[in-house]
Amino acid sequence: MNRLLPWPHRPDPAGGPPVRTDYAGALYGSLLAASVIASASVVGDFPRVQAVVLLLVTGLVFWAAHVYANLAGERRVGRRPGWAEIRRVGRHEWPIVEAALLPAAAVAVSPLLGLGLSGAAWLALGIAVAQQVGWACVGAVQAGATRTEVVVEGVINLVLGLVLVAAKAALGH
Image (tube, rainbow, N blue to C red; front, side, top):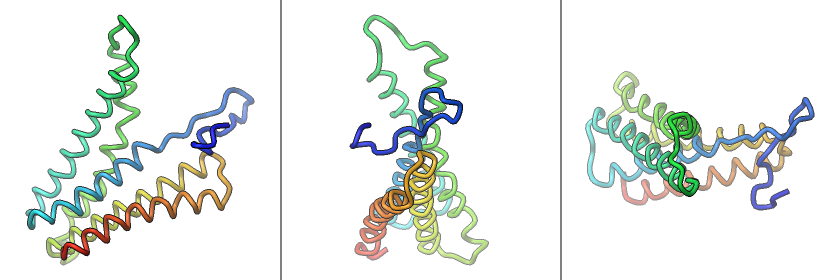
């Protein structure tokens, strides 16, 4: 078993090869969304529509970059990837985009909650960090991790998110 990735697979109950659990895109996308929110207010207050567009476009650009990097990085000599492989990789990396949806929705509905732009940014940042911690824990549970390992995964991801929260707070936003 690879000690760098302590829980990359869970056993197949039917006795076949291990089933891979992969929440990397959701984790990465959540951290990316939190980064966008934390850094966007550094430049100034964005109107809500611009913040929503910035979150979604950043998610889409990073998704496309991951798809391209995956296809180019694993290309076999003398062989171009076919449409089926491109679609497969695109679907696999799609959680990067999906992770931007809840923070973007939070910004979009924040006026209904009586929040100003700063409150909307904090709400979206909180949601991005919470979903990052959640996906880390779900991935660990799905991979058959012990309770301690699930907690460690959650804490690691919480610390990563809190670094962004601290940076945003330190910059006075």
